[in-house]
Every structure is written in C-alpha cells, then in structure tokens.
Image (cartoon, rainbow, N blue to C red):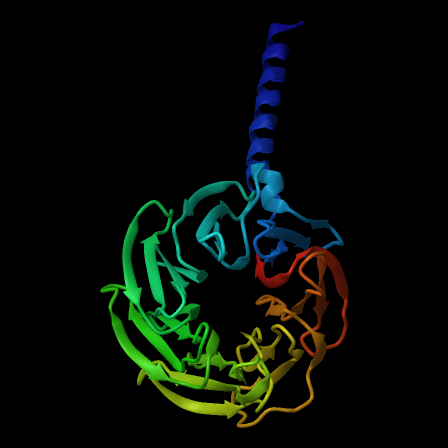
Length: 357
C-alpha cells in the first residue's frame, strides 16, 4: 500500500473515532429523557424499587437500581430529589439516603443511621433530610455534605418533619404531626443552620410548592381522629396556606374538605394553578387557581391515586395507583386539563412519586 495513502487512511480513521466519541459523550444517559417513578415496596420486605418510563415511547424499565448495582435498594422508598446530576433516594424504614448518578443510576454515596427519614433537598453543597425520629419525639432536619460523606448538623424542628423545600433562600419544613397532630412550618437559614421562624398553618402540613409570585404554598392534609377502639371520632379539616416569604406569615388560606385528607401538592408550568390530591384512600386530583379563594368540589381527574406529580416542562399530570402493596402499581399520564389517560405503564410496588429526568 502507498505509504502516503496509508497515513491518510489512519488519520481519517482516528478523526472519525474522535468525533464519534465526542458525539457519544453528548448523548443523554440511559435513564435520562424519562420519568423516574419511586416505588415504596412492601414494608419490611426490602423491595423498594425505581422504574424509568420514557417520555417519547412506551419503553419502561423496572428495578433500575437493582439491575444497575446488583443489590436491593432497601425498605420503603419514601421520597427522592434530583440535584446537580445526582438523585437522592430516601429509604424510610432502612434509615438511609442512597445517592446515584441521574444518568446511569450507579451508586456514588450513601447516608445511613437516619431515624425515620422522609424527604430531602440539596442546597449549596448540603443535603437536608427531614426525619420524624421515634415515637413521641420531635422531628429534625439532618444536614450532610452533598456527597453524603460527612454529617454537618442536626436541626430540631416540629413533630413529624415531612415535606421539605428550598425557596426564597431558606429551607422550609412541613411538620405533619407524625403519629399525632402538628400545625407548623419551620423556616431554616441555610447559612447559619438555625431556625429563623416557626409559622402556624393548618392541621398536619405535608408538602410544598412555589407559585408565580414567589409565595410558598403548603398543603395541610388534616387528619382523621380515632377513639380508643379505632372507631372514627371526627376529623381535622384540610386546607391550603399561601405564605408570604418576605413577612414569613400566612397571607391566604383556602379551605378544602372537612373529612377528606389529600396528601400531595404540585403546580402548573406557569405556576398559576395549584394541583392537590392523592394519598391513601383519597379520591381524585383537584386544581385551584392561585388567585381563587375556594375550590371546585369536582376533581379534575377521578381515581384513587397514591401519589402524583406534574411534569414541569409540558404540564402533564403523572398519577400513580397502588392497588395493594404486594403487586405492581401503575402510572397513568393525563393532560394538564385532566383529559386522558394518554399513557399507562406498569411499575413497581406502591408507587408514590415521580422525578422528571
């Protein structure tokens, strides 16, 4: 072979390989471009799992973590958060947070020895985890560095520390009451790690969202009251509270139901419409405009959904059904106006939430 021709051929091959690698590097990861479904699993069975559901096709991958890492995830996947290329998976009964790459789900870290952890948020290189602690104890927010290798602090909050969000430069914690009743939100300074304010809201606050005006909305689920024989003796009503982040006070309250207790909240893409509903035994997903003072008594989407979330890109409502805690649950995707479902997928046991990857 002509030497000059040979050298040109080698150069062309290397150039092709180089640019091909560059192109491959820019491709999304295997588990991006899809919804990450968090499946609780069965209590005490250590069969919590993660499912991936493609946005563009009917592709579904179940048991993502177990397949990638060749070991079980843990017991009761309560919640999760995506931040800085990582996903933080909060395992309630395992007392840990598992940290994985959002692209390929390879585990990169872990926080262990937590006491009834619930949800998490990542702010300025710190991981904040809400936890109930034990029976009769106040809750806490545990603070670690974002890779999980070092504990930074433990911040006492109210009873049954539940939903947690970062908004207006603060961390906000919903004190749900845990095994009882609480009606407060704790506001934490992320620099000093001190409690700045405790705000009284409705009964049993659960989750947050932030509207177009920067107001923090908290869903207060209320609760059912039982007598000594576990007969229903009454209810604490459910409500929504909008908190002004400048004054750190409730600016507006919206009554929901006297005897029904929704567990989840999310918001539309334009942040003008609040969605709420879902939870064990609750029928429907409802919506209300942030300027409204009352709600429609007719759900936007009917059905007993254990959880739901709204896709922040296109506004689709991802609903989750858990018929029991021994067999597969299902994901149903509705349009933002409640029409559908336009997609259905079989996922893991006890699906309770969705992250959008």
